[in-house]
Image (cartoon, rainbow, N blue to C red):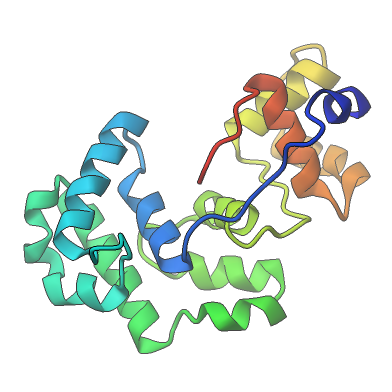
Length: 190
């Protein structure tokens, strides 16, 4: 780990975007290439975005599932984005509360949104909320980096990965970020 820290000195996580926009973008980008996700997002933004590029949940709700049909989103993703918007508007999801909440509570709140699973919630905690101790054992990049750097290529169980990560508590997000850099030196913007 010390070598990775020296190699990537001066780099770090930077929060990007509003919570609603970040979560909506994560839904749009699920299971498609980055290039395809960018194209779909551009069409989505053209339908519900403001001139400055802001995406408001109220605009998504106003468009509704039918109004998003020309964006290139699957029917399921249109449902997911509309559910996310409805939860923001109704107060079921309130970003202002998150600062006082534990990571597990935020993950549970986000996983109640259709189309958001644990991995997406953990990525949100890492890249948007900049939570310091998130350790996404289901992330393929983290699994690969640990396998290559610490276990001679051996694949580990989620339990073994979790146990190994305890050494970096309460900074497991930081360790994860450096482990990702070992595979790809270009930091991802979530």
